[in-house]
Image 1 (spheres, rainbow, N blue to C red):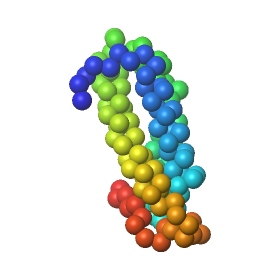
Image 2: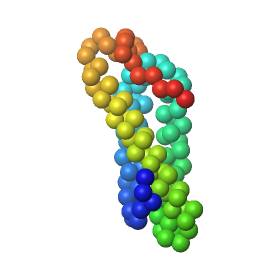
Image 3: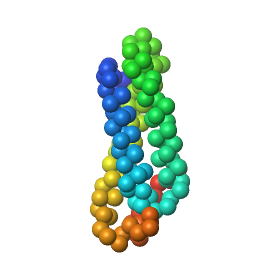
Length: 118
């Protein structure tokens, strides 16, 4: 991705949007993961990382103009957020197509579940 960021509070709101989507997956669409503990653990780790990153974003977005390392970190974070957002969209879409009764029983999807490899 291009090294142009200069987004002000853009990444902060993007982190919040990804956290909202992630929370929905972990709470409401849990059955789409079909008990895949590795996938659940990875999504929970992503959630924890985003909670850790959120408080420092405003400061980092100001420091990007004077510190190239901070700017690179923000660009890398932006790329990772785009990737995470795409993944969460795929999971949400999969969950939406499996909302029929009987497909998700007792916290498990009967078939066509998502598998995420670490």
